[in-house]
Length: 158
Image: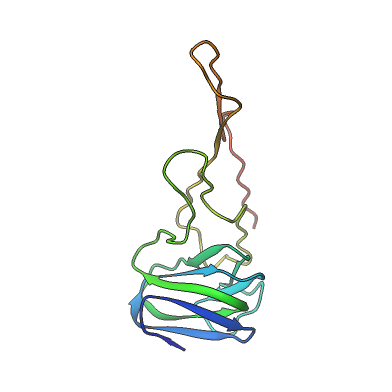
């Protein structure tokens, strides 16, 4: 399948699908709009757990984080996905809004399996702040933020 623009919604039918853009982009992004997992890779022959394959859960989004120009990538799964080729490393499908208390991403965690050949070049962690009650001048209510204890857990294995 050849994608004629940099953004398009595609329906997957369980077979591996090659998505080809009309020009090279350094980043590709996929938003999973279906009910099951979708796999994405810059190489054909997708299989869960294979090196370079990213699993995108239902409602989630992710991309090929390679940062060098390519004009194609591969998908495997069922249901609708929205794909985008871009020059930005920022995920255009992230949820968020101005003001506090919004959810930044649909994914509660990320797992990169067998990623030894694809090192993480950068990692930004964003936490949530909560306030239990409505503050008044006579009754201040503390704001509690992720990392207030002085530490934030990140696990790297392998």
